[in-house]
Image (cartoon, rainbow, N blue to C red; front, top):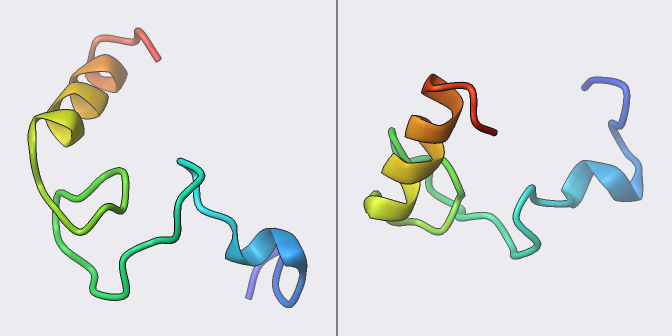
Length: 50
């Protein structure tokens, strides 16, 4: 459940939009697509530029 379980913060997404209902491997930003935006987020974290 975690520290925010059952609170308003528990349902918030990281990018300000509702999250996808289906878990898709590689979909970092939760927009139900694996695309270049996901790759750029991953690359930024990989190189420590987040």
